[in-house]
Amino acid sequence: MRIFVAGGTGAIGRFLIPLLVQAGHQVTATTRSPERLPGLREAGAEGVVLALNWPSGPVNVVDDEPAPAREWVPVLAEALDRPAPEPTSGREAWERGASNAYAKEIGWTPSHPTWRTGFFAAD
Image (cartoon, rainbow, N blue to C red; front, side, top):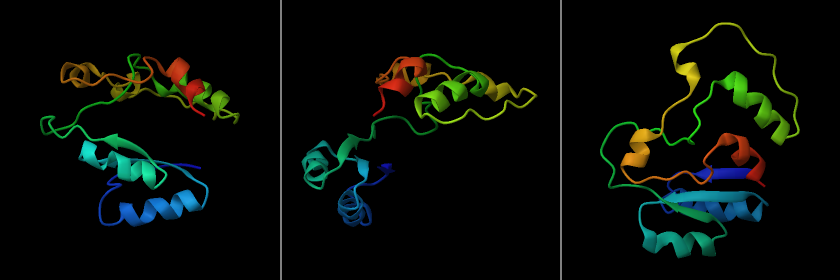
């Protein structure tokens, strides 16, 4: 199973990661310091440095192609080789997807520009 650990070098994460890796999980973990990335790798996790110099408040970290769930959920289901759920009716304002314009403005770049290729790139 792929597992994400927030605070991988913290009080709980540094003990949890080796247990998860030993159990056969693929672990990605965050740290606040680039100097701690080697320790995460040694523990068997892929490390990600948090963007601590960002301003306070929410930042949408999403791809370049905002889309409502009715568009991307069937594609994700196909990528996971699972049946897609039945669509529901109704529309909320947030269903169009989130914009990453602010995240890009402060220096973030998506690994996969679109969910259409990103879902299938995951191993």
